[in-house]
Length: 428
Image 1 (cartoon, helix red, strand yellow):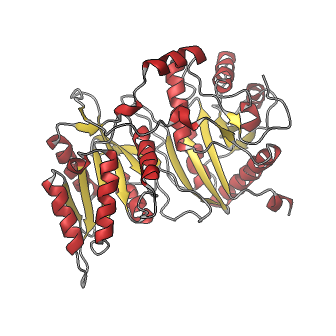
Image 2: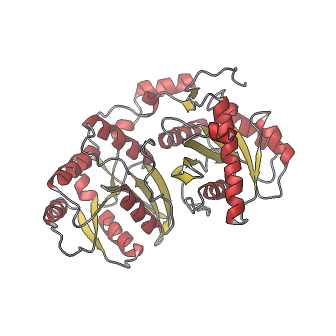
Image 3: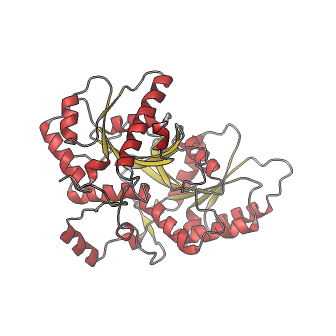
């Protein structure tokens, strides 16, 4: 009964650690699906990913941060990685889960502590240390967290029943920490992360050496959030996105996932909350900036997922507004995906939209029943080549000389503060 009293309906959690594969394994373990790829590619830059879903009656949002504790990163690189995580975790994380490897050297302990305090002096009050597998150094784990919230050991790879028991225990422990923090989370100055919309976004070229892994960055758009998520999962070949809509009380945010498909590294930005005719233009612009920040340096393709009978004249106008919010030339980077037309449908408005997009240089791809994701990826690649590997770049995000001076004065650190005034002092 006591656990029910402290249960939180929504939890935003950032996963960190010194081993990206272990972090991904823990994230998949919590969500109960293969939301994150556990294999790493040395030739591909690692990016934070967001995945969410209902877990034991709570809506859990996980931010997989595979690069946070890399000893080779500079302060500027760490700062950009922190900002990237916060974009994905708005309005701020309730908890940081620190996933430690089986062995932990003294220099790694010092590096972890320094990295964590760069976020906030309050960091340890919002942190739980996780040690996966059975062969772990509990003393090292305890020393790394320096008396913060207790550590927890996960045995990954056992039965589904055991997994649920362990996950429930973890969530209850997280809720106890959240309660001790008065139900608050670590927040930040949004003006520091998202600047006001200043100008339209020009098209840039991206010429990649032939020996590197080809990257294609796609923004998924559409009226139906479940359909968008299903399309993303279809492309990546795994359940990266939850196809169930969150509870009405949970605000939807964009998600990012990636993986190798047909020899190309595909990065997908899932945008489940943009096709609302009641949204003011300022909100659309703000969300578009969020997507672009997660798709840096910019998307190659906008993938518009539509049903053959699900497009009205109002929808067509809304689509035009959304795409123009990205760029005046977004249509030439757009692929409309429809499934085979059913009987008795009137695709008149959809056909008008497709013709308009084609006229501007975009394309239409009809996905037949039993279709292969490789066919879709090849069609997208053809459009990318047609646009000479160009992508939409947000020049408004480039730093001004004033912002560079401010970075020097502050050390470039993004400062996190509790959303609710704490009862105790921050650990130094």
